[in-house]
Image (cartoon, rainbow, N blue to C red; front, side):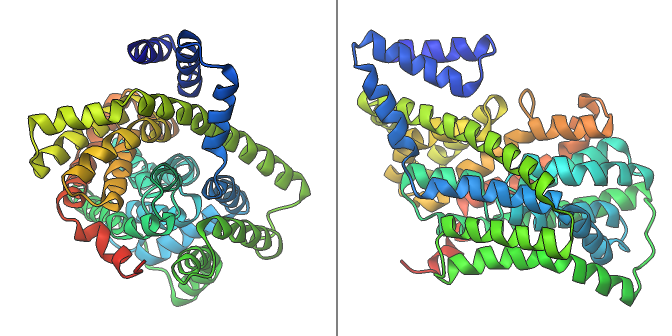
Length: 424
């Protein structure tokens, strides 16, 4: 029956059934085949959703949507241009800076590339950037979103493992900065090689104005981070504070929000949340079946019987996650793989916090790799660039992503140093 579970899941995926329903249907087949009362199906699904931590998800989704619709994106981009726009490749760099700031609000890569990419890709093309690089810059910089806190994938990992979401958030800060700074250097090299134009340096008055307009987004990031780190509120409470803050800024400062568009934003946020929660609920049943059938222990035993070398185990784990990221959506892959592979890595002495970052980083890289690289597809569609050209433009950024991934994998201090400062 365990084999039937996996076979039916793969068949459903192959014929185009969405991942969440593929999980649910394959689990239902398992329950029927084993004569398990279907009331247990509902109970297991509910228990997967009955988590205070998961309340972060609708909170941060709503806060990100409110800030985006409230005019925040343009303010962030203007601030980023004033900061680095005068450097060679400054328009591309401002895209990355804007993504790093926006990452502290949205927590998702797709929201980043859809909002910032819609503005920055046409702007880069207008400045003379090669279209494939304009697309590649937006697609790759959007990956910072799930790494720099807050992060929806980190919330999922924390829920699955019982780890502190706050520590997972903090663990992503240095890898996120590494990704962003390295990408900016690549943009500078590409711009110098292509002799891209340099924008006029902003005057002091313009810089101050853009800073004042953009400071509200930076304040939101600090409220979220230091509120959690200082122990003033939990990540779940932080998401509600972020929603209230986004409403106040959007209504009274940017004056872009009103009752009509707030209603639409809430409706869209509910749809997004419902899709994620349905996936989480079905995945909890799937994970329960795996545990019942001792699949995690079987995989751990099988891998460790081949080798107990920590370096090789981590390499194999990375390969599994990278491969899964090519075909599965990030949250789906986390829900399926994290409970299975956690036992393997902890058996060779890998810290669970470090493992959480390894898992998330691998899977967000998959957002730019075909056949399911949604961020690359969205950016290519915005830039009207064929996918094959976009992939060629992405190569130098992909190489840097892999360098950061290997650094996070084999240098634990990159992810564990900041969380260690929080103590217990």
